[in-house]
Length: 140
Image: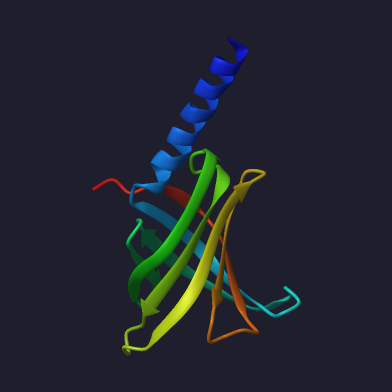
């Protein structure tokens, strides 16, 4: 009986955690930090950034710029939707000038904070970090 109860609990938690993974999600941040290889802050930009993604597409709007792209792969595991867990996206993004780049974006929730960390293949000495102001399902 205990094994059945545990199985049901794990499946339910997995269902609700994965349920977030199949929806369109929006993350907003008001500050972007550019980190060096030693994770020290090299520069901080105070600008609103909106990131929308689902399992196949991603749109990133930092300030007046706009990046669009496709999600090449996604791994997602949230034990508490939009609060505790992790999503890792491998994406191919294109900027306003038509330049294409590959990046890995990790969104992690723990200790009451949602943190996004982006690593762009063409910029191996820099990482981008944002603390989410909001992280939620997009309602159409």
